[in-house]
Image (tube, rainbow, N blue to C red; front, side):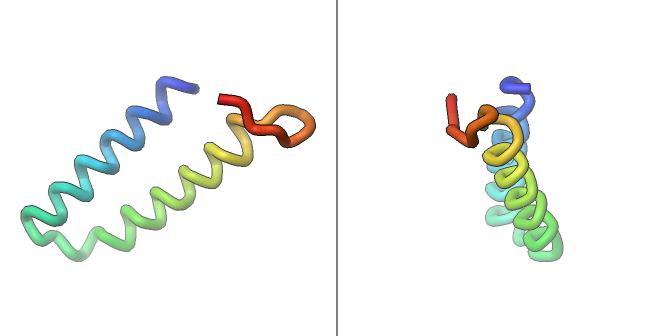
Length: 56
């Protein structure tokens, strides 16, 4: 799981970079919602132990 998250953020950063270059403004909201959802899922589910402490 720790390999999936960096690949996800890498593809999101490349996609945002592509949006700024080519002006694809229709997908900005989709990318932002996907980014927020993956961020909260990563923080609150994957990197917390039983006591809620974050370990990386």
